[in-house]
Amino acid sequence: MKIIVTGGAGFIGSAFVRMAIGETDLEVVNLDALTYAGNLENLTSVATSERYRFVHGDICDAALVEALVAEEKPDAIVHFAAESHVDRSILSPEPVVRTNFNGTFTLLEAAKRNQIGRFVHVSTDEVYGSLEAPHEADEQYPLNPSSPYSASKAASDLLARSYFVTFHLPVVITRASNNYGPYQFPEKLIPLMISNALEDKALPVYGDGQQIRDWLYVEDHCRGILAVLRQGREGEIYNIGGNRSLPNLDVVHQLLAITEKPESLIRYVTDRPGHDRRYALSSEKLMRETGWEPVMNFETGLARTIQWYRDNSAWVSHVRSGEYRAYYETNYAHRTGE
Ligand code: NAD
Ligand code: TYD
Image (cartoon, rainbow, N blue to C red; front, side, top):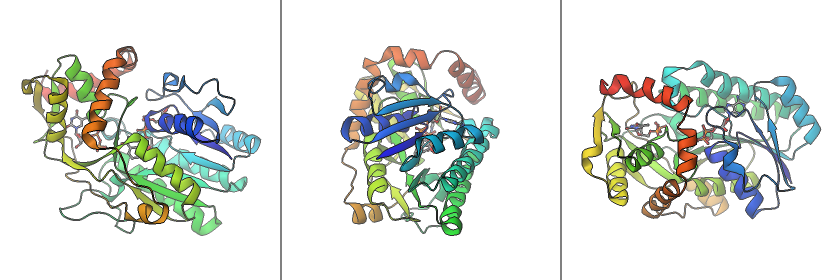
């Protein structure tokens, strides 16, 4: 089976490509624009595989996407490419709407014209918005996105679904909770806090730090996507959660304990506008239909992730140079008053 993966040089996409090449017999064509978040260093272990090909290109480039899909004639498209960060979507929504919505449209069109047998659209639990405890979102839960990021993902989910309903394109949508693990760009909570802690820098906690997220180890997510690729029913949505809800401050405390750094590094900073208080989802449908379940325990996964960042300081300093500095300055300077 041959698949086109979009965004395969990013955090989750590259974990998926490494798994697909290392643990399955899938042939993978990786289409990625190599934005600030895309990094071919994430793929050195698969770069020479005969079952792997990299194509540098933008999913919004309709001519390029059409030519690639027509040439490769893949059995499926697994669509990860996105602008994936809420804070950046607040600072600069244009690329977020462009890639997440227009890019998905371009791919859906090419998939329709070339009668692709399966389109896995990778989405997020953030489309359900903030939920009061003890509610959990199942796949029928109303969409209530809060940020330009989550709104663009919800819009692209609806567009993908419309291609199933209207054109019978075999679309399957996945909605995962917050991922963590090796190779995550240090703009998201866990890798940002790890890389700051390892350098004895302040850990910027937004608001009171009591916001709740469900944490999913990236390899558990990728196995869930493989299960959906193989067994998911056309036109269906599948939540993929880690079954581990924690307030942000608990995550930060655990991380400080493992890195043996002092609590005094914690810095409470101005909250994110429109900050969702709590995400919670049920993955019962995926578990029931495919037998998938998340296997990584959070404490083990966090320790493993911290060890990876310790062992890969060159990767960290590389991705934190250049553009990252400008972003950090813009996102955090006004929060801390520095
Ligand atoms: P990421 O930001 O690490 O990587 C995104 C990748 O997409 C990068 O390689 C980037 O170069 C590529 N890309 C961006 N714009 C592109 C364009 N116009 N054309 C081609 N490539 C482009 O993101 P991630 O965290 O790996 O997330 C991957 C997917 O999973 C996204 O769709 C995201 O919404 C979804 N998701 C992420 C999480 C999470 O916790 N990170 C949780 C649930 C769902
Ligand atoms: P993030 O990793 O950006 O994921 P998302 O907002 O998509 O869930 O943030 C996770 C949580 O951590 C969220 O409640 C915001 C909070 N957070 C901080 O407190 N400080 C930070 O510097 C960052 C990046 C996030």
